[in-house]
Length: 269
Image 1 (spheres, rainbow, N blue to C red):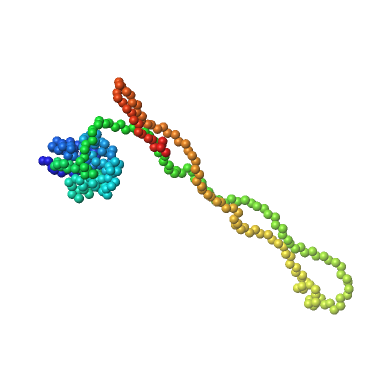
Image 2 (tube, helix red, strand yellow; image 1 turned 90 degrees about the vertical axis):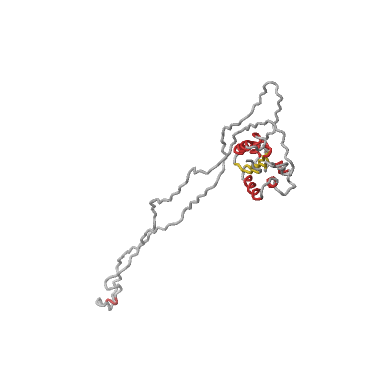
């Protein structure tokens, strides 16, 4: 049984196209089907395999035609369809996330599905095939790796050092000379108090000398300062890149025109 309104979302163009084939078997016409997508390349895939009306939300020409409107193109398209507000919001989010929206209106009766509320007129169909050319380009990636390390160890070494230190010492010289042989009156050998030597018959004299000894003290004689700085070298790297080229060969006398609208990014900089 045919339904007046069908609204479904798909993840891949192939699944959407398979669904449209099933709908046509059920009696729906292709002119009653509309597809809403976000990206132009996805729309191109659908257009190459069907005659469906495909509306692209991010197509520059479409956005430019609506600069006078406060509504976004996708909002305006969805409002022109027979959907509830809840359905419009849900399908808008689905399309913005990259999914494909299929809308079928079997009873449209001049229903207008267009961003400017005008009847969508199918564009003249031309047979077109696309061949993509690829080339390899260099992408430089750098990552830091450890190329080495510096280890500084502190250890103790021993050396013997000789130093000459002058020291002084006292020497005692005893000299004996003849006396005057004068008579000393009132001298009593039994009375030591009047004698001229200390402690009876002993004379004590201290003899002093200097003794040298070594005292070691640690002192700072050198400081090690370690600095790390970054230098930049230019390294030349060579890699072979592959690129696909085309060669147009004329067989017979075809009416052939080749237009080259390509511009390399590295040529415009």
